[in-house]
Length: 105
Image 1 (cartoon, one colour):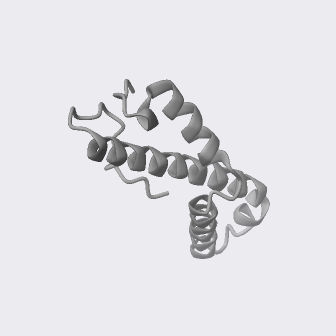
Image 2 (cartoon, helix red, strand yellow):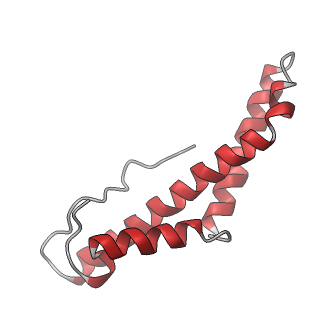
């Protein structure tokens, strides 16, 4: 899973809308990343028998895990399950990110 460390949810700089929209964009990105990690773990668990059954072919097993991660990331990027959206709503409400306030993450 490729989690970009630039997703920093620290406090918003006193400067107005551009800092707030930047913070909002980072929060949305982190929420999508969390959904991607969750989906990847869920899919890997569901395919565990297939992945573990590839003992003789560790390369194929690694490719299967990589494919699962890519599919999970793609699913998360579309927010089709709504996990990232719900997480964003909860976090932004508790930190006032979407209202222009400062985050206390």
